[in-house]
Amino acid sequence: MTAAHLRKDPRSVILRPVVSEKSYRLLDEGVYTFEVAPDASKPEIRDAIQAIWPGVVVRSVNTLNRRGKRMRNRRSLTYGQRSDAKRALVTLSPTGDQIDLFEVK
Image (tube, rainbow, N blue to C red; front, side, top):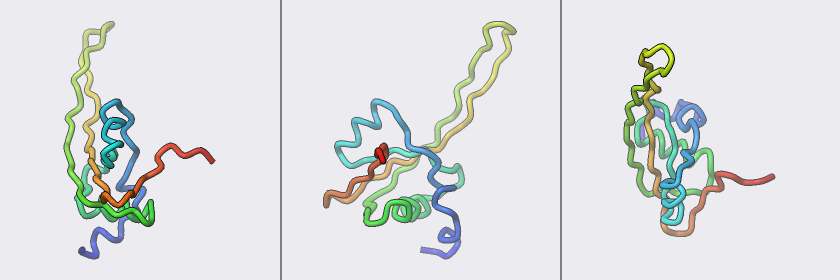
């Protein structure tokens, strides 16, 4: 661990959870999907998850960069672009760790 990635705010590294059918299917296996900052590294993502949810042990982090789709405007026949996104698949340790993403208070 270097001191450079310890200075970042964990909430600026982890932007939001990804809500999709595939991400819900992976929850049963202990894999959580998050949209992260484009410049975030795997150690930064691991440290941010463990800082936001204390007591959770991250086993592995896989990242992927998704290019934004090119979309056509129906009225003016011009093209636009959806924004690019970086996602992180975070696997927790098999000791029963769990993240409550949609908790009701």
